[in-house]
Amino acid sequence: MRDTIEALYGQESPVAGQNQRYNEALAAFQELYGPGPVSLFRAPGRVNLIGEHTDYNQGYVLPAAIDRDILMLARPRDDAEVRVANMEDEYPPREFSITPNIPPRPVGDWANYIQGPAELLARETQDSLRGMNALVCGRPPWGVPRGAGLASSSALTVAASLALMRLNSIPLSYGVSLAAFCSRAEWYVGTRGGIMDQFTAILSQRDHALFIDCRPRASGYRYSHAPLPEEHTLVLIDSGERHRNTGPLYNQRVVETRLGIHLLKSRYPWITHLRDLEDLPWDECRELLPEEMTADELYDRGISLQSLMEDGTLPQAETFVVQRRCRHVITENDRVLAVVEAMQKGDLERVGKLMVESHASARDDYEISTPLLDRIADAANEHPDVVGARLTGAGWGGCVVALARAGAVDDLFERVSSLRHETNGQAVQAFVTQPAPGAGHLATINM
Ligand code: NG1
Picture 1 (cartoon, rainbow, N blue to C red):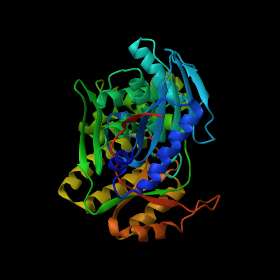
Picture 2: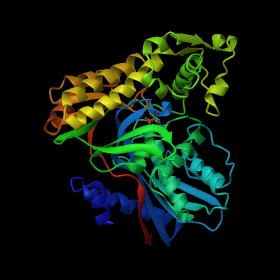
Picture 3: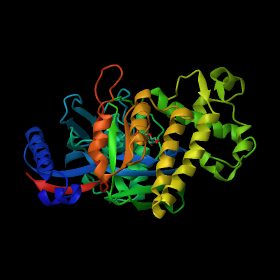
Picture 4: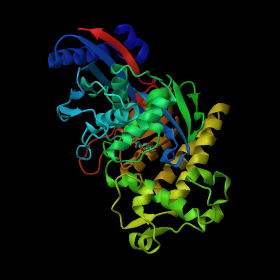
């Protein structure tokens, strides 16, 4: 395992610590399920450099996989039962049978991220599938922090999909079709997220960001790997504020942008997603988009939230903000393309400016920031060796990402460590992350 671990995490990472983590997970698996073969799967979390809430609008994103991941250890069973345990006590063991209709557990239950791929696989293959005995290991400090906007839920979905497919000898295409499968599988939990997280977990390459055009085409999705600027590093500054996308806020943003599309269709009937606005004049589009609409106004105009949301969980809001939400998505798409171009030209000043603008748009137009995230982003952006910093992920808490000159990291840590959570006084935590390779089956071992 040592060679695999070194190849995965790079020589700069503390290999001994990772080694111990893998050995502890293998020992815990054996204690739970006895001796025999065990297959080991890994899926990383992700940071998003720019392109927030654009994926479900078929726009552009520029994420990277991070060097924190989730491990799943699994052994096939002779029946269709799945038994899954977790090395963290807060996630109790769960059991379910693989069928094309697996009743979801209560919103937020961790096993839903395993039930989702199992149900979708049963529907898509129409074969009877073998279950598994499995163990999940995502503990700190190597695991993906939960609710921190670093896509821990997708890492679990991807690891579970890999395990179920491999143990059932379903040929794995490690590319776009697997990523698209995982992204549909995660809708099981009720959110209507885009493809960014699962794609990043699967298609990433070490030391590279991943540019994804989230518009599906007959040939799949367009994506490319973009090297990060040399002698620069990604710093994640975790506010400690936590958010769950299964709460009402995420789907509310989804429905607000879909409402925008619905209204714009009166003049532009061919558009299906906000992405289609890239060639249309914003001033003309804006006329069709009210600042806000109330639930009563929607009702009076015969607009059904239910049909806008399809089968995702309905937000229970009274007011829906339309124009600013659409403006964020449209301007954010432009910023992603501009950042990719500026990175290619080595124009880091422009990259930084666009990251700052992205944070402002997320704060003012999409309203997904928090006062603490704003203070962290401001403090980081004031540092002379920070290229740019902005909130990353869904928002409402989680992390700020900073692209910083490698030599400035200690000083940046020092500066942000004085920032504290307003209510519990906890200091923010900063760590460096090295873009990691995508998910995979690491080994099958006989124990
Ligand atoms: P995080 O940050 O992991 O909660 C969510 C969505 C993404 C994307 C971002 C915002 C899921 C699984 N993930 O990610 O698709 O929309 O928010 O850019 O829904």
